[in-house]
Amino acid sequence: MADNAKEAQLISQALRDRGLDPTGLTPIGVRPPLGEYLRAIWERRHFIWMDARHRVATSNSRNLLGRLWLVLRPMMEAAMYYVIFAEILGVTRGMENFPGFIIIGVLMFRSTMRAVSSSPSLLSSNKAMVRAFSFPRASLAVSAELRESMQMVFTTATMLVMIMVVPFHERPEFTWLLVPVIFAFQFFLNLGISLTMARIGFIFPDTAQFMSVVGRMLMYGSGVIFPIDRFIDNSPLIAMLIEANPIYHMLVMYREVLMDGAIPSLDHWMILGGWAAGLTLVGLLFFWQGEESYGAEQR
Image (cartoon, rainbow, N blue to C red; front, side):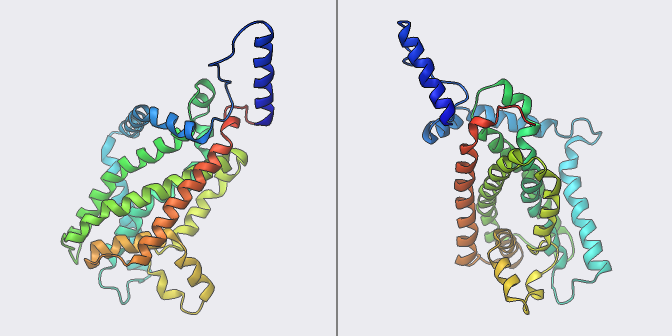
C-alpha cells in the first residue's frame, strides 16, 4: 500500500512538472478508503444480483434433470444420513422425531458447509475476472452468498415438505414465520466466513485442500446429525466450545421453530447474531486490507 501510494505521488508530481493537472485522476490497483469501497459495491448491486441469478440458472444446465437437482440432492443427503445414523447406528434412542431432526440439520447446514469449503478458492476460481476488470473484489463473496441463498430457497422448501410428509408429520405453526429471520442471520454468518476464508485462501493456497475436513469437524461438532448435547456432560471444555459455536445455535433455532413450535431463547439470538454481525464486519475489514494484492500474479 505504501509503495503504491508513493508511486502515485511521484506520477502526480511528474505530471505537474510537465504542466498537466492530475486532479481527478485516481491510481489503479490502490486500495480505496473503506467508505468508497462500500459505495462501489453498492453501485454494482445490479451486476452482483444478475451474476448470482445467472450462475444459479446455469449450475445444472448440463445435467438431464437440470434444476431438479436443487431438490433431489438435499433429499438424497438427508435420506443417506438418516439410514446411517437412525437405521444402522441407532442414534434415535430417546428422540421423538429423529427424521425431522436430521432433515433440518443436514439441509440447513449445507450452505454454511459450502461457505467453509469453497471460499478459500473464491479468488483463484475467478482469476480471469479479477485480472481483467477493476471492481471491489468483495463483490465476488457477496455474489457467491447470494447465489447460495437462491439455491437454499429450493432446499428450504424441500425441507419443509419433507418434515410434513415423513412420519411424525410436523404441521405448520406461526413460529415457522421466523425461518426467514434465522436464515438472514445465517446469510451474514456465511458472508463473514466467505470474506475471511477467501483472503486466507489467497495468501495460503493450500488452505482449500483441508477445509473440507474442517467442514466435517464443524458438522459433527454442531449437532447436525445427532443430538450432540447428550454426549458432552462429562467434558466441560467441549461443552463450552459447542456453546460458543454459532452453527450449533443456528440449528437449535431452526429445530425449535419448526419442530417444537417455540420461539428460541434470547441467548440463541444473541450468540448467532453476534457471530453473524461480528464475523461479517471483521471479514470485510480483513478482506479489504488485501484488496490491492488480489490482481497480482499468483505463484
